[in-house]
Length: 532
Image (cartoon, rainbow, N blue to C red; front, side, top):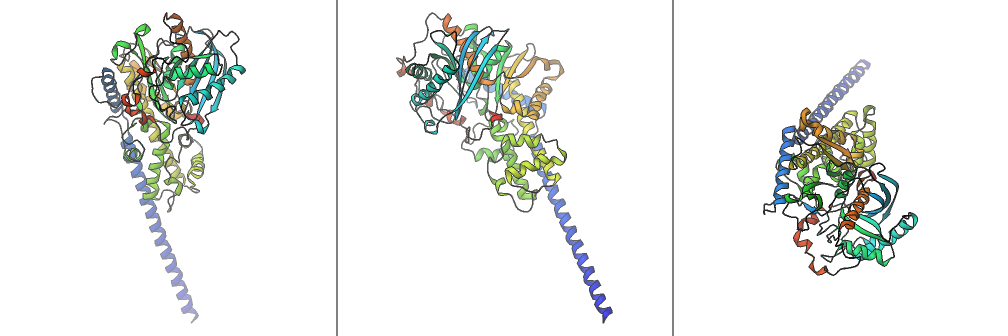
C-alpha cells in the first residue's frame, strides 16, 4: 500500500513538473513571439521615418518650389501661406539707446527693457518680467487687452525707467502668431493663437496699442509689431550681418528669412531700404508627398481639429513629438503586451506625453534606462518594465526625434537654396526654441543633417546658431531699427490714436482664411518652460 502511494505521489509530482515545464515553455514562446512583434513594429516604424540625404533634398526642393509659387502670386495652389513682414531696415548692430519690448504669447506676455550699445557693447541692463493674461481677457477686444498691457507696462517702466528718456521711449512688440501687416507700424488685426484679441476685422493693432499707452499715461510708443520668428531674425541680424534666416523650434514652428523685395509680387508698400524685406514662411503648413509620413502621423492628423493642415509642424514641433511616441507605444502595448497583459489607461490618453518628458527618456544614459522607467511610471502609471522594454521606448523616441530634426535641417537648407546662397555665400541661421536649446540629441541630429546634405565642400557655408535671448530681445532690436527709420522718414506715421483710415483696412479673414489653421489644439496650455 505504501509503495502504491509513493508511486502515485511520484507520478503526480512528475506530471506537475511536466505541466509546469510545458506551461513555462509556452509562456516563453509567447513572450518571444510578442517580442518579435514588438521588434517588427519598431523596424517598420524606423523604415517609414527614415530620412536619407536624397529624401531630405527632395523635401528641400519641394519647399523651394512652394516658396517660389507663393511669392509669385501666380494662382498656383501651395501649402505655404507666406506673410510679408514690412520690417525695413533690419538692425545693423550699430543701434544704440534704451528700448522696451513686449512679447505677446498665448496665455502670458513678456515685458523687457535693455540698453543697446552697438557692436562693442551690444546689450546691457536687461530686465524681464513675465505677466499672465487673466482668463477673462482671453476672448477680449484688443482695446481691453491693450489697456491691461498698458497698465502693466506703466508699472514696469516706473520700476525700470529710461534715465535718459526722450519725450517718447521706443517699444517693440512681438506676437507669437502670424501677423499680416500693411506697414510694420500699422499692423492689422487677425485671430491670435490662444485668444481672439478682437472680432473687428481691420482694426489697426499698433494704433490701438499706442492709443492705450497714451490714455494710461505711458510714455512709450510702439514702432514695430511682428511675429516672434521675425523678431528672432532681427536679433540674429543685430549680432551678425550674414544672418539671413531664423527658425523657431518650440511647441510650434516657423521660419522667417530676408528676401529681395523684387522677388515677391506680394509687396504692396513703399520700396524697402536696402531692397530687402522679411518674410514669415509659415512653414508649419508645408506639405509634400516626399515627407516621411507614417500611419501614426496620419491618425494623429485625422483626429486633430485641423486635419490635412500643418503637416510639417506635426512632424517637427514640440507639440506633437511626444504624441507620436505615445501612439507607437500604444500600438505595441495593445498588440505585443510590451508593458504587460493590461494596456495602461493613461497610455490611451492623447497628448499625455510631453516633449520634455520624451527628451528626458531619449537622453537617458543611466544603467538599464532607469530614467525611462521613472518617466513611464510618472506619465503613464506603468509601474514595472523590463530593461528590454525601456530600451524600445528609448529607440522610439530616437526615431521620432531624428526624423523631426533632420526634416528641420532640410527646411533650413530649402530656404538657403531659395536665396541662392548655398554654393558661394556664407549664411547664418538663428534658431530659437526649447527643442533646439534643451533637447541636445535633437540639436545634434539637426546639425548633422545639414552637414550631410552639404558635404565637406559646402558645409562651412551654412552656420546654425542659437538665438541671443530669443524673440523677446528681438523686440528691442526691432524697436531700435524702426526708430532709426522713423527718424530718417520725413513723413512719419500718424501719432498714437489716429485711426483716420480704419475703414480702408482689408478683410483679413477673407484674405487669409487659413489663419485659424495655425491655432494649436492645445495652445500654450501644455507649454513647458523649456520649450517656449
